[in-house]
Image: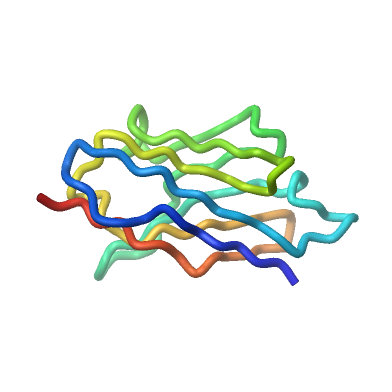
Amino acid sequence: QVHLVESGGGLVQPGGSLRLSCAASGFTFSASFSAYGMNWYRQAPGKERELVATVTSTGRSTNYADSVKGRFTISRDNAKSTVYLQMNNLKPEDTAVYYCNAALFTLDYWGQGTQVTVSS
């Protein structure tokens, strides 16, 4: 059974930085972690969940929401089955629960989320 566990969230002042991690486990040999595209989503109170950043299975290609371009960086370490989200110059509007997602064709897995609060 696949498990995704996010960590690294917390309270930070505007302009600060956080690094989120998502540790993955339970993948099968035929569909290992390195086969999955990995994504970070976020959901703020009263808002729909939005896609923040994506990284391909190899890590060679990334994409970002316009709202975080130039501030957030997604990366992955396939040897450690972990994906990261480095968040710099955080703004109050970045406050949300951040979710890790693994996607491969019809396979779709989610973590439980980690809270990020940006406030002075």
